[in-house]
Length: 269
Length: 328
Ligand SMILES: Nc1ncnc2c1ncn2[C@@H]1O[C@H](COP(=O)(O)OP(=O)(O)O)[C@@H](O)[C@H]1O
Ligand SMILES: [Mg+2]
Image (cartoon, rainbow over all chains, first blue to last red):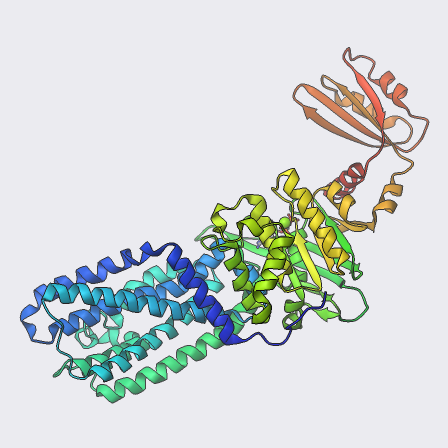
């Protein structure tokens, strides 16, 4: 038998294959989207009730916070979780054994998680808008849409790094559970970061979505007072931190693959 | 094809695992899974690695298939270093790890294959026809669009095999491919393995069944506690014990004194004791014609219900001998 196609495996094809498999697995069992939706919707409704009088843009604020909460859940959690599942299913070994860098498989899943996060965010949006009786005011819809997509990219960059930890160790889930809540608050999903005690700021700033979210608020909430460096500073910071995360992900993945081959814990879960 | 040299060559492969137990006061233990493996496997044949559970079969398979790094030593597959040239090797090798894990259960068998076809870069134009081909080959065509979670153990194993050969590897690693299968599925799997060799694929197969190694592998190595304790053709292994006789004695319990007396008979090289409920069985390996069933019967004459008989020494006996000698 002659082996054919022994050149480089197309990375976009691997990424697409992984995205496709993630979608198929989701279709086979879609109800897991629901639990991740409950907390954000409840959170949004409560905060909306509490701060109804805070001004015309509070609805935007509540939607952004809740939407982000569900997207974070989906993107980050989902990315790490998928790799954790690879461990559990025993599919991590054959996948690593295939001539595709695992990074591209993860990327495909992260893309799916970003998309499904978007679905989650949309559901949250519809629920809240129905509750509030009308859509929120949005000064710059096009800018908002663009920035929104960028926020998802920043989330994805964190997702890839998290996934790397899942390849590294089966204990990543434990670390992630602890980190999750800190992240909700730290990135300003729930409250603007500037409202938090000052010592949490440096921690928040290591997450790219913190910057991007603050920019999104500047754009969509007139009179919003976030980080002192303002909208463009936020944007710059978001781009820079995202680049760093992607760099780390790339580097970590090459290391991680070597590490797991050394440890021989690929089939542990 | 690559070089015409050996398909696999290893030099002094060792592998240790460090594991820690406990949370606060972690206790480190070191398991030496492989203790210096030297092997050479020629191309285009089935090579069998036989050994009991825990011998190190999976560890060696994973090292050779680039999924685990050796602690020391070197291994070459198709003439390429498994550590440094893993990228070159991976598209050329197939790996089938036994067991039920390793598949995406919520999607169909066909979708599992599509996914791996993409990860292996099988040309898109050929993808579907290749999938059909391998599904037919492992006799799964009828079930290919059902979810894997509905598959039986045997069907999952067939799907594993289908994935292993999808990219037409030059060398295929099969780690206990029939483990947990019913006899019929196991037989079908062995048939498939033989048909692959006919296509020129080199197969490295591990098993803990002597009969499977005997049936499939013209050459084999026996692994015990991380060491190769025998390496030969099946025929020569048989010769190893060609002159030996095996005598079995059964009764309701033997005492140590009796066993000692049997050991003192001329030519008795080994006695294995087994219990089957109230019945004990002694299996004696005898290296001379002087000691026959009568001599054994004479020593055990006190037992009312005694049965002593001689039987042909089997490869299974050789295997158990080798493995037990090592274990002592
Ligand atoms: N990841 C691991 N961590 C610690 N010990 C391991 C690991 N993998 C295998 N071992 C140990 O190495 C030895 C050989 O295991 P293995 O190669 O799985 O044997 P076999 O496949 O022949 O049953 C066993 O003692 C096993 O417990
Ligand atoms: Mg094993």
